[in-house]
Length: 323
Image (cartoon, rainbow, N blue to C red):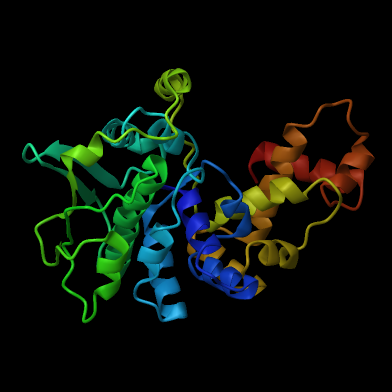
């Protein structure tokens, strides 16, 4: 699972027009309400698919590297600030490793010393294959270097970069972005090798008092909310926001979810449900959780899209019996 902020960051920094952004979000099954969800977790396959779609749309095989360089600080909430308030680069990376589950459960990340002069930061994508995996890895390694440079105020250049992927036909951009000619492809692991001296660099964003508060906060936080990304759950989320002011037609919900009426009906059928059934379920939930003093029965019926109180009463009997 990945924090949905990954997908939002990618879309926001790919240089897309608004129309192209919406088309790619729809293709990756990312409706706008999901992108607005803050700290919600979504399947990691969403990010991997989005990378492939954007690379194809822009015809730019280096897009993940360039977006990674923009990942300085501030877009990934508490995880970013745990890193940035640490006293040194090495300690910041260690905290990022310790609290990686704040933003993803799909990356294994570990920093270890190889010698007195060098230390390795190993990355492992736990699930995912193909080009999406390669691009997500490129983004992650470039993002670590970008954050190291931003937080230290120094042009930190790794000693060596290793990628599991095969060598591309041209990899000049890799050299330019990472600042080293020692880039190995077809390696057994994805890895950055730092100079040990660089890991001791102080962070210009260090704040010991705030760091202590953030660490205590991180230890007590509940796990990030995981969103069910099924189409029926997306419909329920949309209806929860829309019901209450009268009828909500399927076309309105389909537009909200960046799809067509027919596609939405087909996707719901694939999950063993229908638009009518989901609308009925959302109405039942709204009626069940209303305050009895909020409305007359007639007003409540109109709020949830029924023509009169009698129709609502018949629906309530149906809900009560499960018919």
